[in-house]
Image 1 (cartoon, one colour):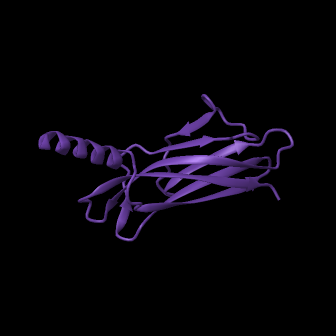
Image 2 (cartoon, rainbow, N blue to C red):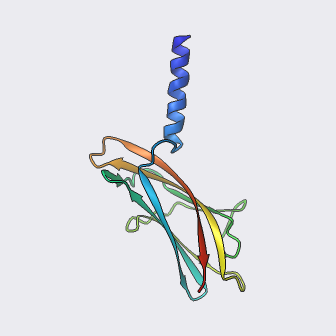
Image 3 (tube, helix red, strand yellow):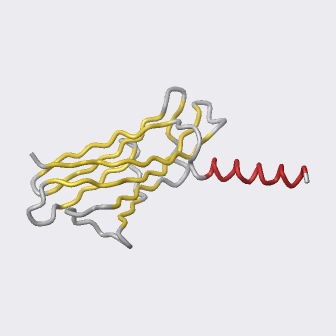
Amino acid sequence: MRQRLASIALAAASFFLLSGFGAKHSSVEAQSVFKDKTVELQFKVKPNEGMQISKEAPWTLQLVNTQGLKLETTEGKFETKTFIEGLPGFEVKAPLEGGVNAGKVDYTIRAFVCTNDKKHCYPQLHKGSLEWKKS
């Protein structure tokens, strides 16, 4: 019985660590910039003090509620794995549909950070919303 409980506890801990749950070791700075009839959405991942970005793991950005933006979606989701090292994070350039001048997208970012000595690495799951408005 004790061994079974230990196995369940280990499985639960692994799930939380691999799912990006747990302590946040980074944050996201999201902003929008307009150029002509296009909005550029930027999502910059900022590691906490003592942490650094890890490029070795797969990063992902998902956007939902993209009404008003001409983005190629699958089942209502736009997804990119194109990580921009210099940002670090993601940048999405989307033409505006018709006369749309404002909107909001919901985002989910899967990111990875490590301690500066690279002894410990952590998956990070960030969720949020970004409102955009053409002035």
